[in-house]
Length: 391
Image (cartoon, rainbow, N blue to C red; front, side, top):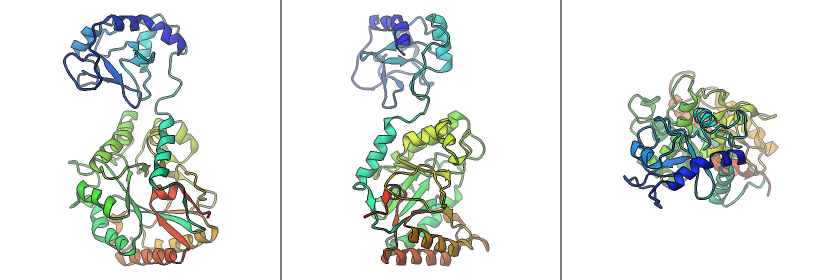
């Protein structure tokens, strides 16, 4: 990076000589033609066109010789001696196109150390701080005094969640996590019918009045394999949109949807998390996330207060699942380990092979009785992630 900083000093000199308006806010104006580095270390223009790049007026005022087309390939050093790119990728570094143009226009040797040390979407201190925030919000590690931590995650299906599941949870004082999509009410969105007759305002109220945690489930739940750009939009913008729609409580967790993010394979292996852009983005923007990684004694998962990324659960959509899950919960309680329960509320009373309201009621009665006996503790996914079965 030092070689690159020195090499682009000439571009920095051009910027320094330009009559730029220096402002302390990102308020767009005709005269504010510079750029600022946002919280994600990405360049944000104070004036920009629909592509996110500088406007023609800004280009003219900046006067960089490397800005030859609308791609705006130059870079400069800001007042803190940090490299700021006029085109960038998600990490804040130059795009491949910009890097190629700079190597040619600034005579950088090919293969020089001109790429950022942090790869696109890689974990930064953001993740550590989100974990820290999760613990602070819940008063630190949640010690269950030997009780097995159990969390129930409900994936969308808001019509049945509102009319069947939530009243049952309320009556028993049980916590839950609701995984939803930020664009689920958009025209043509997936799962529109199962989310009917609900609103974001209602959901936000549940997070305050009931023991309901909201988890990011992506923006769209769209079918098919997504591109890298679509995956980033689904993961990152989905979180931002969901938080804006549900402002009462922080959204710090991710529940993996059945979406084909490039190479991620629903987070089944360590490599899926560390070597794919989707895995890095999920990790970077959430304190805790589910996946499909199996524990040795699956579905029992050790809970020692440390967050287990990519943990997998057991599904209770099928009519035959309740008896099996009761046995699994009892085994987890005996072993003092955690367990994650997953459910699609749309499956309730959906046919002879699917769970009925009566069967779900029976399971929730069982959970309530086991919690009252001190054998288990029903938590949200965020709480479960920082639970410790110790004293």
